[in-house]
Structures are given as C-alpha cells and as structure tokens.
Amino acid sequence: MLSIDRNLQEVYSNIEKAAQKAGRDKKDIKLLGVTKTVDMKTIEEAIDLGLADLGENRVQEMLPKIEQLGDRASFHMIGHLQTNKVRDIIDKVSLIHSLDRLSLAKEIDKRARQDDMIAHVLLQVNISEEKTKHGLKYEDVIPFIEEIIKYKNIKIKGLMTMAPHIEDEKIIRENFIALRELGEKIDSKNYENFEYEYLSMGMTNDYEIAIEEGANIVRVGRAIFGERNY
Ligand SMILES: *Cc1c(COP(=O)(O)O)cnc(C)c1O
Image (cartoon, rainbow, N blue to C red; front, side):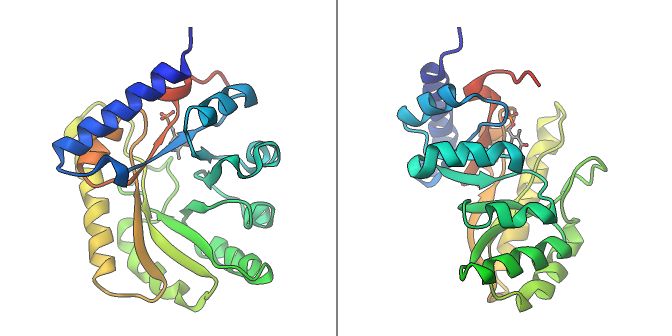
C-alpha cells in the first residue's frame, strides 16, 4: 500500500543525512513534491503532512490543482513551458524553473509587466547536452543572462538542471558540480537581473547526490507518490 506519510518521512530523513554528510543545514533545503499525474486526494494528504511546495510540468494539469488548493501550497512550474501558456500561470506560480529560450523570456517579461509584478525564474541548463532534454547549453547561459537584462520584469533566482538518466553516479555528480560552479561564476559577475538564491537539482534517483553538491531545491516525485502510471 502506498503510504505518503512513510515515504515523506523517508525522503526527509534522506535529505537530512545527505545534508549532514555535506555539513549543511537541512533547513536550507526545500523539498518540492512533484505531483504530475497525482490525484487531488493524495496531494491534499501530502499537504496535510507538511509538504508546502509542489512542482508540475504541464500547465493544463497544474491549473485545476491551483484552483482547488489555492494558497495551501506554493506552485512551481518545472516543465517545458509553451509561450502561449505563460499568461495562464504567470501570477499563480512562485517560481518558473524552466526558462530556456529568448522567446519565452520575452513573453514572461511582457505578461509580468502587464500584471505589474516581477517574475521569478530559474534558467534550465542542459549540462549533459542530451538531445532529448530542454535547456540552455552551458556556454550559452552567460550570454543569455546578458541578453535578457533588458527585460526588467524578470528576476533570475538561480539555475536548474536534470541529470542524465544513467546509473553512473560519478557522471551525475559531475553534472551537479558543473551547475553549482556555473552559478557561482555568474554570481561573481553581479548582474542586476541575477539574484542567486536557488540551485534546483536532484530527483528521486539522485536527490541525495544533488544535496551533497549544493542543491537547495530537490524535485521529488516517485519517492513520495510512487511510480506514475501515465
Ligand atoms: C517528473 C519530474 C521530476 C520528478 O521526477 P521523479 O523521478 O519522479 O522524482 C523532477 N523534475 C522534473 C523537471 C520532472 O519533470
């Protein structure tokens, strides 16, 4: 039987262990429960157990959940975002993790300006350069930040990546280290549109490694909610 309570306790305990190993405080790590394909009743159970941040990767699926849950949880857009969906979510999510192209930056800026707000985003970086993955190429990140400085209604709060789906822990770790070092390098340049707060990396298979390498948002689905049936 799926026990959200037991799963959550286990994930929190693993987060604590990984934080300890890295000499970090577990309080500095935000657990994002990834609720794609998860039903409302189960999500509400997780919220009642203390899960405060939820990640979704499809706007169509996210909107009814936001509607129903209101401010009981904070929503994060973690998936590929179509330009024509930006206005549906811009004022409803706390963070967009997946800014990866100029056309999207332009649209986010426009919609945020219309709503008289500053949109908080992370840049998604395709460190592993897998063709199937979205995200900016490593070497394009800094030029991208410089290009979008003109978009005054976007604040970049950090970086996000997805590690390659492989067994080799060494390569996964190298991906996370590369993202962290990129974040530090950008931070040292003091761009006015980059306010370094978040490193979003690590999922069910690799969140402990990500925490050891500096993640402060981990995006965990299956370890909390079980395998997804699409
Ligand atoms: C689905 C998803 C996750 C969670 O993956 P799990 O393996 O279920 O933990 C994290 N990040 C993104 C971007 C996702 O699409």
